[in-house]
Structures are given as C-alpha cells and as structure tokens.
Length: 481
Ligand SMILES: C[C@H](N)C(=O)N[C@@H](Cc1c[nH]cn1)C(=O)O
Ligand SMILES: [Zn+2]
Ligand SMILES: [Zn+2]
Picture: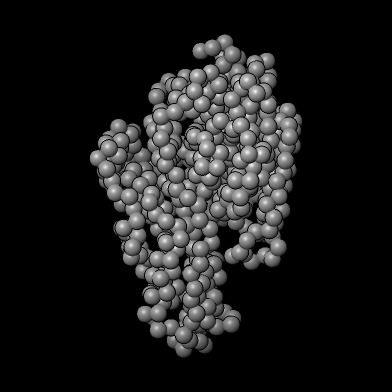
C-alpha cells in the first residue's frame, strides 16, 4: 500500500469518534421526504449537512431551490428540499469526481417493531453494529464522503481529485425535478466532471463486497376509489352501499399473483430477452437462497436457485403492493366503511420497458377491472413518480480503480452485480454529463434498508470509507478517464 493511503487509513480509524458523532447528529433529524408534515425536518437536515461541508473546507456551497412539489400532493405550495452542491478542490490538473447521495430517509416509527428509537443512532461497539433510520440508506454513506476529506486533511496528504457533491433530499420520493437541475448544470456547476460515483446500495450478501453496474427503475402508482362523502358505520350501511375498499382489494388483487407474476397484459413483451452471454454472468456470483432467507428472516423465497433469484431481482420486473391510504390500519377493531381509499403499488422496471407505455397499460388494466365490478363508485389510477432503470458497462477506469480499492481493503476481488432497487437519477447523470457512473456500496444485503432496525456494520462503515479513499486515489492515478 502506498504511504499516503496508509496514513489516510490510520486517520479513518482514529477519527472514528468524530464520525460517529456527525452521524448521530444527522440521524436524529427525521428527514422523511414522503411525509409532507415532516418537510421542515428535511430542510433542517440539509442545513446540517451544508454546515458539515463548510466545516470540512468544501467551498462554493449552494443550496439549490427546486421550487414547489408537483402534484399529486396533499399540501398546497409545498417546497421541495434543496439540492446541496459543493466542491472540494478545483485544481485543473486533477480529475473531477462527482459524488451523489441523498439525505432524505424512509418513514420509521418505534411501533413498527424497532428495538430502539429509529431516529436515535444506537452504536453497539461490542456487536459492531450501528442502528437507526438512514444509517445505511443513505446518511452513513453520504457523510462518509465528507469524512474521507477530513481523513486526507488530517493525514496531511494531498486530496487526489477535485470532489463535487450533489446531495438531494427527495430520492426516496422519486427525485422530483432533480433531472432538470442536472441537465441545466451539465455545462455549469458540473462542467469538467470526469466520473460520477454513488454510494447508495448494498452488497448482495453479508460477506463479499460488490461493485454495481445496474439498477431497476421504479414506477409508483396509486389507484383512488371513492364513493360516500364520509366514512360510514358498517352496521348501518354495510351491505347497503358499494364499499370503496372492497372494490380496491379486487383491483389490487388483479395486478399480480402470489408467485409474483404480473397479470397486466403487455408487460412481458417489453422485457429484453435473456441472452446466453448474460445468463453466463450469474454463474460466478456468490449468493444463495440461504442468504436471501437470512436477510428476510424467513423462508419465503419464491425461488430456490441462485440464478432465478438474481434474475428476478435484477432483470425482470416486479410489482409490489405497499399499502392503502385512507383505510383503517390501527390496532383493534373499528367498524368503519372508509369513504375514499388510495391503493399504493409500484412496478420495478427493467430494460426495455417504456415508462409512458407502462403507465397506459397499468391504467387500462385497472380501469377494465374496475368496470367489470359494475360499481357505482369512482376509480382512477395515477402515476406518483417514475425513475429510469440503468445498466452500464463495468469495464472502465473507475470500476478498475474501485476493484483495486476493494481488494486492498477487504482482501478479495468484488463481485460485479446489478441492484434490484432504484436510484432514479443515475441514468440522467450518465447521459447529461456524458460520464461513466460507478455504484460503490457500503452496507450489506441484510442491513434492513426501508425496514425496521436498519443497521450498518461498523466494519462496513470504516471499510467503506477506506474503499472510497483508495478508489479516489487509484482513479486519480489512472491514465484514462
Ligand atoms: C437503492 C436506494 N438506496 C433506494 O432505496 N432507492 C429507492 C428509490 C425509490 C424509487 N421510488 C421510490 N423510492 C428504492 O429503490 O425504493
Ligand atoms: Zn438510498
Ligand atoms: Zn432507500
């Protein structure tokens, strides 16, 4: 290992208490982008992050206002959270790397089944685990880019590249309007960016590090069924009025079967066929049904074979039903007929699905199913947000640098994987900035992102920061872009 990386790694180890403290302060801000009542907290977290950037010596810090959130939305004139742009270094002789991350998080409540308060970072050094909403997705990795700068500075080593940050607060809610900003700044703030790196996904399993070259997209829908003007007593009106929830259950139940097969006509035809070349890639990936079961804490896998699991996670679409707004969902037994219900579902999209065409197929399917019910209620299905899938070629200077960095830190070559989740803005970065994008995950496949007890292993936090540092160093030394 070069002398410079040895001393940076030593600083990453010795600055751990400061990094814990920074993470603790960030996690305690409930920046839930999907909860309109918590929007001010998303703004508070943006402010906290900009202060951290400033303290660490980043310059040209801009909190870019994206305006008012477009519909569908319940709160009128709700402002979108700012995008945080900043720079560390602007040496024309160095390469420039843009790092993207998101500071918003998924909702979380103790009552959901968390062992500890979700918005209070629980650090268990004996077990080697930190727990809290956002610790792995994506507050921990986002702050790590700032930590890496601190470690280089503390070690007295020259920072190897110019760093540009693009940190957003709406990723968990579709990255609304970020597209426009990136296109607008391609020849402005982002001029000269050579590469984009995103640390916002996870290893496939728990042992082997991975580098990621693909993501599924996500089209999120709601089917709204309304009838009575207010919720009703089911003893008085049950059996007498057409119930929106009964209609909704039938519409939602017609979308997908219990084996995960999507029942909407025309979707299968849009999926790119599997080639022999692609099929061969799955053989060498380290993963098993046991790892999937361990991550879900159950034996609920729809497939036994590794290849089937991976293909259905990465290269086939899936439809998930997430919940119903407006329906009774608390403990106990409330005898109510909900008057207006919003059924939420999403489709993870893959090459070569077209978002607009998909939406028209979904609407056609839901309208036809509802019509077949002969209900006097009203029904409509709308797209809440969509984000594109992305698949790239992992044979370039960034991936080579990241592979070398991973080997240095973890002692093994990483697997090259795709990701079943979505980061809506990835394709826009690649196309608008005409650069390659690398996904460099920090956490493990069992971290519980979006779930209860979200965690990040301390070894992954520290190893992840070292990998980021070494990747930047090796990429800076690479003869190619
Ligand atoms: C992979 C990333 N950390 C993530 O969790 N992305 C979200 C993005 C999203 C898309 N629509 C709503 N949220 C995800 O994959 O669910
Ligand atoms: Zn994320
Ligand atoms: Zn997420």
